[in-house]
Length: 155
Image (tube, rainbow, N blue to C red; front, side, top):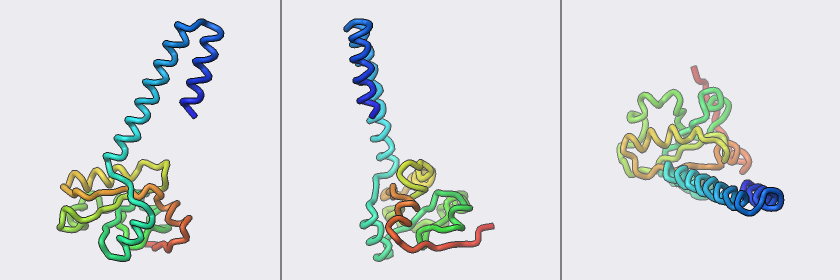
């Protein structure tokens, strides 16, 4: 959408102000687009995505530790079964994560537009975990797939 708007603005400038100004504006749009692409790529380096099917399989295989990064109120209302409440566990995270640093750790938050998972993923990576992933569907995607939730009493 942004690229389309840049194209429209560049065309409008070419028509009204001349090609030199339009060319300058077009170059700025390319830089902005490149920055956006770089930002999206950087987000993937925090933790690559895991699909719903892959996550469900890892849960079935008991081969994943889940970090719910939505906050305690959301965690209490409903979280993916077995997930750790990152908000309450972050100071003692090393004590609740597996001893095996190559174990799969999946951080999630509200959904595709939420970035709260980054704190959990970064904390696990900082502790030396090398297989940290992000479930981008988040709790919204989990519910949308009609998967079961667990509730909890959180102080």
